[in-house]
Amino acid sequence: WLDGALGERMWLSDGVQGLCRVDPGVGGPVLNPATCRIGADVPGQVAFDPAGNFVYMPVAEDGVYRALYDPANNTIGAPVRILTESGRVRMTSVALGPDGNLYIGYIRITDIQRFVNPAGAPGGPPQQFHTIGTGAGEVSGMAFVGPDLYLLDVDPVTLVPRLSVIRNAVACGGAPGVPGTCAAESVPGVTLSVPTAEVHQTMASDGTTIFIANETEVLAYTPATNSVATLVRSGLNNLGVDAAFRATTGLGFDAQGQVYFGEDTTGALGPAETR
Image (cartoon, rainbow, N blue to C red; front, top):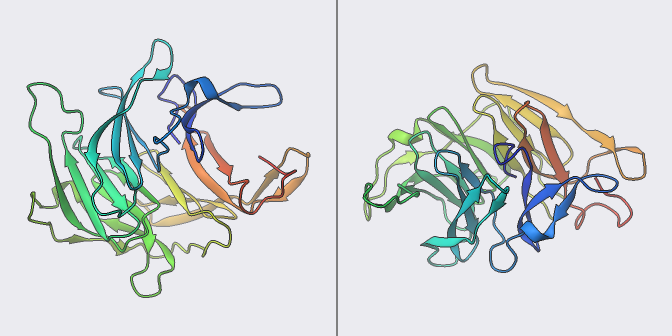
């Protein structure tokens, strides 16, 4: 999900239509198909750079795309590929660091990579791409809190989903052909479930707190106090029933700090139950 910085509207990655804007509709919010990036541009976790109004979209087995957000009409322009994926390693997540660089995670490799100067302004510093260190693969989400890069990946021994962190990731070394040596470490006290549906954990950060969609619940982790709390485990569905969550997925929040999330209705939910 993209947060409310884009015209106070939610944008999300739909598995069929790509990145779409959510508008008010009869009976509740709906995707506006006129705003969707339909076709090859079905991204994983996207990132937004308000300084340049750029949206960055990782597309598995394709590459990273950049598109320009137009605040005048609240739309996103045609995406342009700025980085090509090599080797079918399935890039899934990107996060914009406080240094203005783009950080990329993958499913099939453990490398965490940095794309320098993704805005690529004419006359600006050159772009380059390199590995800063390693996670454990199976990355489904990334987010910064200060200079620290948090990952949703897996434990390297048990392969159970975990929350991990690369401390001071913006200072990690690396250059083209010379990988950096930083390594992600598990965050103690945060327990994630092994998904039973066709859905993976996702995350978002407001710069202070990390919100995690953990299949049947939404968690809030605060690094400053190393504390985790459960925000919600149930809610009203379209039938008016307060039912337990079964497949929480994409997360986002608005300028007022309200947290939004969805459920993957193609997996655990019945055809008559949506939210």
